[in-house]
Image 1 (cartoon, rainbow, N blue to C red):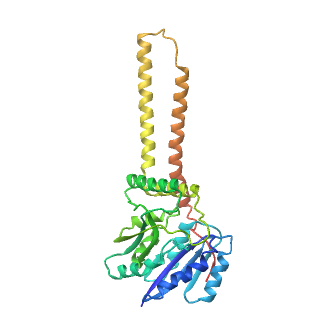
Image 2: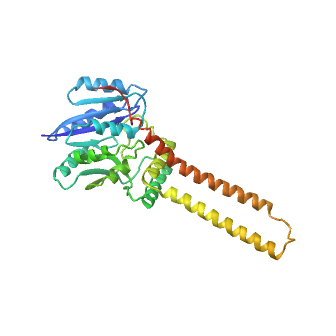
Length: 309
């Protein structure tokens, strides 16, 4: 009998943890597999850890958990869960039950066929989300797929079941700044996506604010595309060309009319401010990439475990 590891990152999820386990167990107990749960408490400040302790005490053979020393982010929690999973197949799920457990048997069956290495999921709509949030998310996928060689499926979720080979490939990528949607696509393998309609959280509220989503998107762009650096080069080249043309125009004007009055102070100041702003923009883009290099070369751990059962 093969073993299925279910990796579940948790942050401030005291309400959903008690609901998640019975909902998933109702499905997986009918599957011909040995089950292992790997919950990862990402530095929650509520009673999430206590709920995980209770769950482990009630099911010590199946349920295991890691608890971080502080909040390291979902990407670190996912990496930790994958690293500690021992199953032949590994699936990542959100504890809020927005990832339908009823897909698990079908995902397992497709992997068992040997035709696929990874079964992912994709939301075909965002019913229940704010329209502006849905619009910006769609635009992000369109934008990053235009500027990156790594194509990311629009609406793809982290909810996916993978073979051990795929998980080992993902774990080989030890970068400090992690963008899992891009990493899963970058490693390749044979991937099949299952479509489903958006599901509301079973309880609690999401901690993904608009600002966090923006930062996550900008990290994804910087991690999987050099286009911003190329944009900085083109801006610099264009500004230099305009400056050269301006110098030539001034020289020609002075040659034909040496006594011409000095005019255009307002436009000159505006031009200086514009060029200065573009320079700062380019420096900021370059600085973001240098910052990622700085974090990587320090080789700090991606996460720190305080408690493990």
